[in-house]
Image (cartoon, rainbow, N blue to C red; front, side, top):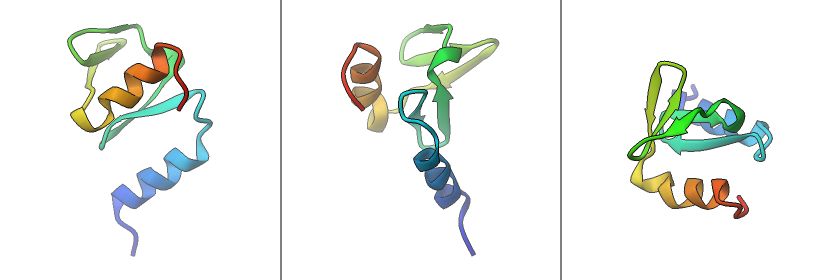
Amino acid sequence: MRSTRETERELELKLPGRLFVRVHKSYLVALDKIESIERDRIRIQTSLIPISDTYREKFYGLISGGSR
């Protein structure tokens, strides 16, 4: 039996890295859907998605022009 977390990881590996990024153990986001970033939270429409400490450096590096 697979856990939900393993399934999320498998999904992350299948998605194109230039379009999606993991920002929290429970969240993958589509980069083109990000409307704003507010205090380590991403706004997509009416949702605020936290950016966890684990993924913060990688995320900010990616959006500032770094590589994944």
